Structures are given as structure tokens and as C-alpha cells.
Length: 93
Image (cartoon, rainbow, N blue to C red):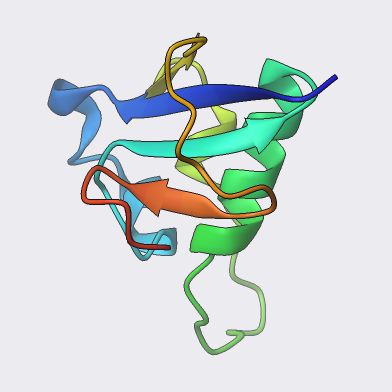
């Protein structure tokens, strides 16, 4: 059964280069089966398109790393549309 998870950037990590790969650095909420699924969905939705550079190292999304983000179960949050990642104002990412 899906739950709503809140993913929060850890403020002192926002200088990490991996944040350049995300189109948002704000707290978000998402429906998911597990915290890992919540991280994967958020990483996919927030992926910023960038040109491929031959020989460049691809960095993983910051949303996948628990050293850069916190993922918390939010049982009281009920206004998140299924299949969407939303910001604090309720707008989709």
C-alpha cells in the first residue's frame, strides 16, 4: 500500500555538485510503496536534462543519497496526488 513520503534536502549539502542534476532543491512529497521508491520517483521527476559530454562521469541524483536528503513517512499528508511529486505549495515538480 502506498504512503506519502517527504523528501528534504539537507541544507549544508546544497553545495554538492549532484544538486546541479536536480530541477528543484526544495522539500517535496510523493506517493510511494517504500522510502527507496520515493527516492527513485523523485530522482526521475526532478532530473535536469543536460548535454552528454564524452568521458564525463555521470553522477547519481542527490535524491537517492541519504547523506544529501532525508526521506520521512508523512501519514498525515493526504493531499498529494498519486503519481505526482509536489512542492510545499501543492504544485507538481
